[in-house]
Length: 106
Image 1 (tube, rainbow, N blue to C red):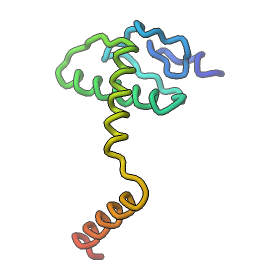
Image 2: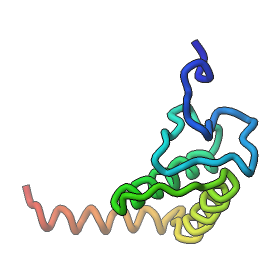
Image 3: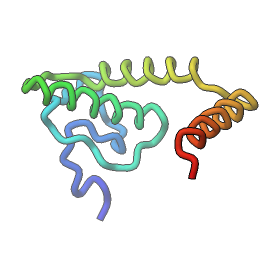
């Protein structure tokens, strides 16, 4: 059985025929298939965020694949600007580990 046999999500991240005008409502299912790349994983994250906010407000709004794609690209661009690499990442990890061991000596 392939993913397409059981995926009922309006925007399927495995499917390559999502048009920019394909509509997804925030109370509908999110595709659980294996996303092809970082952008599609970010689209799924954006969908979950919209779904969580709208559920708290008890509303359902339509979003197009194009809007989700733009939100995902924006999210990835912001993350790339904050991402630490090399020695800076190692130093940050060591510093956070040192702080956590001081709080919980054990």
